[in-house]
Amino acid sequence: MIKKKVFIAIDTNKVAKAKKIIRDTQSNKIKVGYKFGLEFFYSKDGRKFLSNLKNQTTFLDLKLNDIPNTVGAAVKSLENLKITYLTAHLSSGLNALRLLKKEGKNIKIAGVTTLTSLNDKDLREIGYNKNVKDLVVHQAKLAKKAKLDAIVCSGHEVKSVRRVFNKEIITPGIKMQNNKNDQKRSMRPSEAFAAGSDWLVIGRSITNGNIKKNIQNLLEILED
Image (cartoon, rainbow, N blue to C red):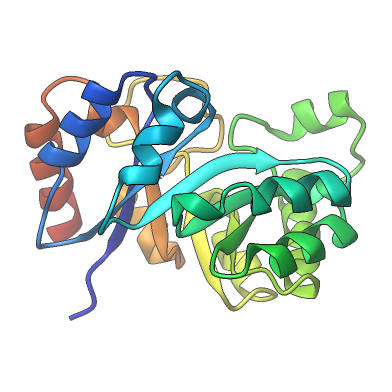
């Protein structure tokens, strides 16, 4: 039986907290990887910690978005980290995405579509004339054209994205509880896997409170 795959978001600037999250989320029932975002990477000891981290599937969520030369140089500067996945905004354009893929070598480049904190109203405010679903599908086609390894999109768009992009789909905005946060297009774990996501990204639902208990709750949810 293929194990379900989950990235635990390490959204902290404290190495001690990162170590605790990794220690308390080990499981042989699911495949667990770890997502490190801007807060951790930019912290005093974050990069050093990542450079010494071994035997883990790592997802560096920097969401690169710049001109081709800059993003190409950025990905080359990450070579010593041995990271598995790296994110870049698909809005950075085809040339930048292709260069990232070329310079990334052994890193899987994941294209970020429309953030899960945005809805149709937000897109209109920014200046897009497409709704979320249509825009994400358009972005997925760009990811395919750039030959990226993965795409990041909410669970609500996974089925549509799967029709045009046949590689890995990573889904953030996963909630295990009913609490409100800054995610507008969220989904429950089982729903996202049922939609066709390959990886889920789960943060506060796991890392807030009793981490071991939260992981056990997740396992029970996925077994139902």
